[in-house]
Image (tube, rainbow, N blue to C red; front, side):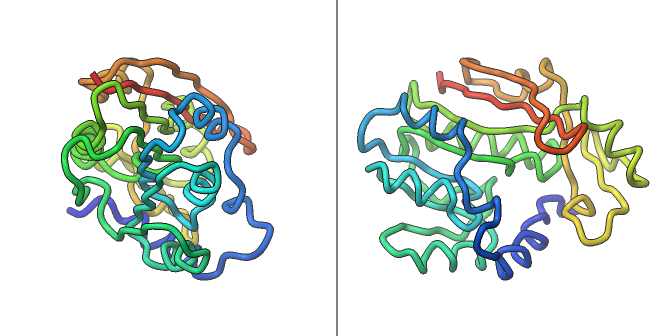
Length: 214
């Protein structure tokens, strides 16, 4: 069963992106993280969407590659010009070992089951240089009861859930985890920062994390 299918939903979203969308504004966490990076560092934005972070990072002088599985998002980035875009799956990155100083993946890698997630994390580690940093988000298991209260759902494999929520990406697999489970997933990394944060909607708990490649 293919589980990394949420790009189908997001491809449709990116095709109809409107001016003023929240998906066009970079997150403050990304800006803070960027302030810790070496000037001109080579950065992979894994799951770049319509480029809200990739384009901002490039404007700060970083050497950025924007990767996504949804071509409509990459087409929006291409309209801005001056950016290398790559269409690929997150668990099969078409790059050499140690190709990037840093990797960003915001609200992306949890759209899968544990098998795809582990393969994706290993790919992130592979393309990162030693001591390179990864900034990302994951879904907190604290969020799961809120989703279950809103939609009928079922666990398709350990920690991976799909919900009967037509018109949303929740019909595609999402992975929820505790802090201990998250740290176990990131074998080969040292945790530099981990916070469980509620986003704009009640119950929308996400792990925010910075990991350093060992």
